[in-house]
Length: 313
Length: 306
Image 1 (cartoon, each protein chain N blue to C red):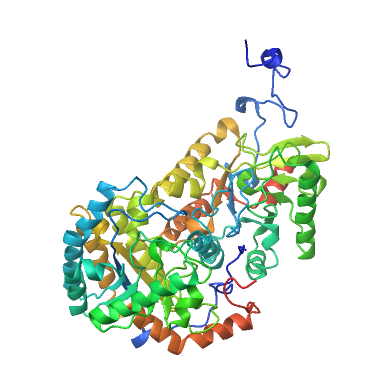
Image 2: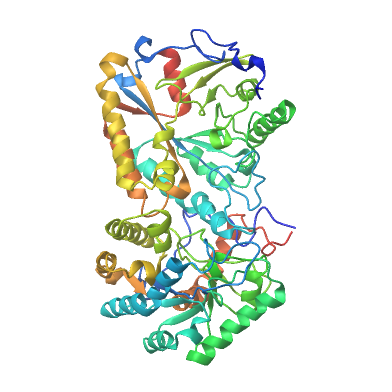
């Protein structure tokens, strides 16, 4: 049985919300999500979606993504070092085994990791509960073993979900999901157990969308990032907002694109007095500790709490 | 042996004028000039669509623009669309208020009760509510049984009645109609329609149930079409609107007052990086003495007197 509405979160109009203030009085919480992904050369077939748009081996698609890992990732890391920015890595967990050097380099920089599935060519569609649990447990265990970090975030592989996904990650004490795009502020997610929030991640300024679907030139992307930031910063002075730039080195770190991206970063760094540069887990932790209750109360006060949990009929 | 019957080459409507009786043929050069209030050359209508997209669209006879794309549950597109109604639309409302522009907000009737918290500020800030069918997934089309379509339109009217709202204007989901749609909406008290754009001035349409006035929206300036489908930049979109305003103003001496219909989609224009382009457009429309920004009803009332 399918559901017309997911009931994963309640309606909550943006206007007149109770105030969120980030640490040190900051108006906007800014985070960068480098997607560090592994796409398999010859993935098994999922009946709901092919592993590659073209028949395997999709040589251009595969090799461009490998370029991202062997060239682009390092270039992006150096750029972020230059501005003292830490990443929150959306990680294909299988990459820990393939490319341990990347994991070590990120861990050495005190970057955060969260799970983006095992491979970006293994989709959640059609998984039973045991399979989905296995992916989550593998994710927790593999990152813990490699880095000592306990992951707290999830972005489903290739944005593929089941009706169970959110209840399961909440049960495993994940703090945030990047899978929901309904807001520029975090919000409690309605799961059977746990304390899971939606973390603004943004498909709109994600380089896959801007360079792929919207076919932007690099300088236009830089301009879009600046405008996006300026608006969210202004609104954040009324109630704190979150801006995430989700990136893929195979796109943004191309030689013709990295300088325009740096230009956008420089603009954002110029407002350091109003911006909290954080990782996703830091934002989620702070929100859960200080603003979870006020959000739930505000939704109830407006008469918008509908009860139940996600996909419950 | 021909695969086509002999009457395939018969042309029963081949004559001077239109091939339907909804409205007569009239070239732009033969119109009587319209005079808008304040002597404006352009009546600009801003139409902001409030639409809901379910996880499980039937997609009959086609998926409406904005419908789900990936396999169930397509949370990516569901939540992206939902962003428009809970966050993006409030940026648009703020921009309208700053510019002093009153807009027209078509709303899917099936969402009225749920979106009470959005309907209230829209009404309180002086905007006009319009009907937008039952839902994005209730598409009016030629293959629909007349009784089914009549029941849909009746339900739309009943749902607005239940919320104490009396909209005059109708926008069809996906701007698609059946051959009976105009008559059915006229029979249920909708005398303004935003689907047709056959002219740059309001056009009276004749139906067995009474007259419906068509107010044109420019599909070629639609935000979703230009910014998403055609990948234009925000500045290019705004620039094209400004170009249209300039051109229409310059021809006012010859052609009289005309209309410019702009559609805004909250999950598109309401994005943080796009809202400054909308502010630019609205500021231009509101500051230009040659432009009168007005709602559907205000334009219809002025047209009746013009």
